[in-house]
Length: 206
Image 1 (tube, one colour):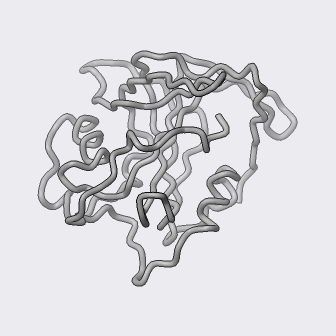
Image 2 (cartoon, rainbow, N blue to C red):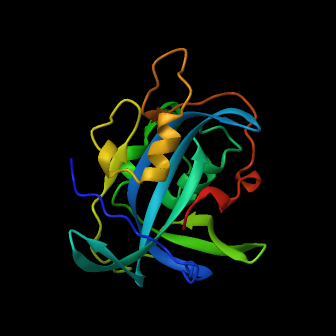
């Protein structure tokens, strides 16, 4: 199912710098329904690699140099006020069509370049890098090839389970069972969604 590489980070690990970065989405991981302080929410995580910022890790006994990565979590809904819809429309540079709002396949984001705005949040003596905005790349902007293997995972498509980071596999394994089968597409749900500003990266190990 693939070779799993783990990056063990020390206290000296430096988060991604604040500012705007050219990035490539290289993972779309739908972990299903999760119990949160704000009720039951369906969560999807996007992973981005930033070619200009480098990290090193060990894979298959070899030291690998690759672009630094950053994660962003969303409630899986395309309601008018949802952050996922806001970021996707900014990423595509246009409003979504009614057909896209009725069901957009998030796996299509895999391999897509974008511009990320990163801001640091501080808690105690720790610093967390958070994605606060996503935008379409500039016309004519050169995008390097994706370096890390892409991951596409959802409750309906679990072939890449072994490639999902352990901390996300644990969240997936603890998911709530839906009353009806979960679809991979994002669907319109006419309910008020909790702002992503209520989420903190404390649960992310890097």
